[in-house]
Every structure is written in C-alpha cells, then in structure tokens.
Image (cartoon, rainbow, N blue to C red; front, side):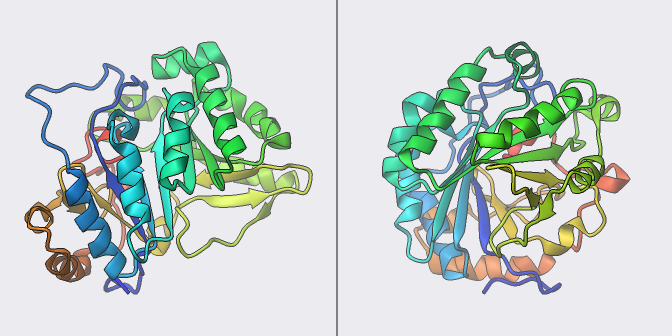
Length: 324
C-alpha cells in the first residue's frame, strides 16, 4: 500500500487527460482556455494504461478522469475501459462540465464507468450561463437523467460556492435533492494564481452550510476509504445527499487519500504543490514496475498540508490545469 511519512494511505488517483476546457467559468477560465503555443501532446492511451497499472500495483483502487474537460478527448471511452480493465482498479469515475453529456454518456457507461461528477453552479438557466458562459443547463440535466436511467451507480453534482453569484440558491439546490438520488457537493472557492481579486469578493465558507444542515436534521455520513474530500450528510426526508468541501478548514489535509497525474504525465503530490514531477519517461517506455518504484520514493516528499490559508496556491494558475 502506498503510504507517506504521515501515515496517509493513497487509494485514489486523479488523472487529467487534457488541460483544455470549453467552458468560461468566471472563477476558473473567464476568458476561456488560452494556449499561446500549440497544444501539447497529452498522455496517450498506452501511457495512461501504464500509469493505471503502476498505481494499481501500489494499492490504488479508484481512478477519476479529469481535465480541463475530459470529454474533449474523443477516445475517452477507450480510456475509461482501459482503466476499468486494469487489475486492482475497482472504480472509474469522470468529472465533466456536462456540455455534451446526453450524446456521450451511453458510450462511457458501456466502457465501464462507475461514477460521474457533473459541475452545475446554478439551477437557474440565466445564472448558469452567466457563470459558465454557456446556455447548456437543460442539456446537462438531460445528460444526468440519462446517466441515472443507465444505472450509473454514483452521481455527484459539484457547485462552487460564490458569495455574489449563487449563494442565494443554496436552499433551492438542497430542495432539488428531495426526489433526486444524487449527492450535491458545495465546494469552497479556492484561490489560484490568477483569481486573487475574484476570490476575495466571492469566497464563502462552507462551515455556514454545515451549521444550517445540522440545524435542519441532516446527519453526517462516515467516509469510505476511497472517498473524496467532502463531508457528506443525509436526511430521512431526502433521496439525495449533501456534501461540503472545505479546503480552508482545520486538518483538511489530514485525511488526504489521493494523488494527481497531469495530462503531461507529471506527478503532483498536492493540487497546490509548487511543481509537478515528470515521470513520463517510464510511461513512454511501458515500464509500470519502475514507475511504481519512482512513485513509492517520491511519496515520502508529500507535505502535511497545502498553504492555501497563507494565500499560497503553488503553481496552479487556474483549476483547469489539474481538474481541481
């Protein structure tokens, strides 16, 4: 089992397959994806297979495919299938903005998709367009309904908390869960290299939401060992669950169970690390064993915590770089 010097075990890999995103979310890429040079050569299907095999050999059980927007990789179904067929990998998930979800979810499901996370920052079409730059809320919701009808086991909706743009919709979001068997996760806005002014205007603490949930009878859920960072709650009168992700909370990193590989094959020991560590040579050589050995040595350099509370976001200029 992959374990760092603080005793944290890592069951969960977040693997970015592209940095490119087709949304213009005001908290991430308000001017859209910018590429000064030619788009770099992202990890190939073969290379992704080597990373999956190497991490599986170290006890990783869950792979989440992220971006940018992973649906922009036409071979995403093949990537899902390859990860799913890797011995030791029990769960394959995708995080998407849902732009073309109705037309692709069947192929993802057929490839072996176990879990789906979809970003929906507003349930109001006009506000959704204002935040994301796209009038696609209806399409996204249709895609989610299709995923449910196919039997995708785990569906989560991600909503970034924005004090001025969607805080007034929190009650509407929660009421939406009355008859929706999904998990809605409110995510605290995080400061990155290029959103400092926006962060100061829009950051809202998730602690306020947790306090309100508890006061209304919501009860905490014990985390699974491969679960993400959300604190989740259930209520007997609701089919859905509510999660809150609070990266600025005390001891947030104490239960960290995940590592990240960028679309260029770099290992990021933390989302907000100062740099990624290039391991692509092992993947290009098809050497999963040596890749596993390299990861095992590097994990001991993982720090006890990020430094977000000090305003330090490492190399992350925007969350599209590593899928958040």
